[in-house]
Length: 412
Ligand SMILES: Cc1cc2nc3c(=O)[nH]c(=O)nc-3n(C[C@H](O)[C@H](O)[C@H](O)COP(=O)(O)OP(=O)(O)OC[C@H]3O[C@@H](n4cnc5c(N)ncnc54)[C@H](O)[C@@H]3O)c2cc1C
Image (cartoon, rainbow, N blue to C red; front, side, top):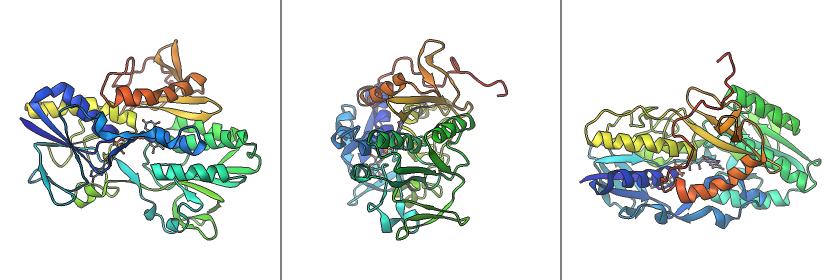
């Protein structure tokens, strides 16, 4: 019997374990290792600061979502020895594998920004962690006016639309609380525009301007001056804040660096289409842990899992790997006032307008605000816990992106 070890039981590792158990049955022994007993629904971190979700709502016990028969080891993995096919766990125990799946995700690393720790959780907050999001609830509810700055330190970050969602929700939140006129909202980004892809960047840029949210683009952050409450750029520009909501540098797990498996951001180089590690044939990588040029998102991990599991089974039986993953990503973007936008794209096709999942009838609209998109974003939480994590197929959502219903501009 082949032994597959999955390190990380977040979104990607849990889907992989469930899909592999379904496809391989009793031919494969699955062991899952994770340092944390809690599974977090990270899209809910966006809603906690605005009081739209409670902190209890976003976390559940990890082991309940793993398939029956899986061995779950609740320990930190300290080192991977790919030559010996051996993992050293915290405390010194070791674990051997025939095939390894790295699903260790990524996290914010505020220490990467000089000066940030001086103001951390005083008037500098994040919402990319459970603790940060809960702490920001108080800061947002105590804020009666002044300068709110939302800051992205450097790319890539997971869920690259989440900073835009925070800005739109902040505009809605302060409008509702009648403090919007006393509040300036500024977006500081290292990108030249509001998003990475041109058509969507234009759309979001126009939306920010129409909501009186100013954007400071191409901003390379040199340091935070927490005493003077300002962000200082390499080019000498400075942005003042009263409340700074930052998305610090996102990096892979320290395990990746300690095992010599990562790039400068501790992301693991993997083939864009097969998800096999570039350095080790019996190692596959999924979700935020990869260095793929796709978005780092739960929806992406869900699409990747199909290819990864198929290729694990191919590798076990000596068959050639499938170049199945096309970079497919789709994502709801909350825009406040009970509306949201949906985008659907892959490596080759940027987000454009249209209807989803069916041409003409939709019912969801692409790159346009609608109430039904917002309701679908809220419904996604149920789908996440009950279908996506358990690798139950979601009707009408194709693994590879479909061009049906998309209005592709002629020049493309
Ligand atoms: C604010 C916010 C909003 C988001 N919104 C959306 C959205 O609307 N749609 C969407 O699709 N995605 C969204 N995402 C992104 C999505 O949550 C992530 O892309 C997804 O969780 C990635 O899954 P993963 O399994 O790769 O990583 P994770 O889910 O982060 O799991 C990684 C796991 O690895 C474990 N681990 C790490 N190192 C070790 C170690 N050394 N030993 C043992 N275990 C280890 C961790 O404990 C963790 O359980 C959002 C994220 C945030 C922060």
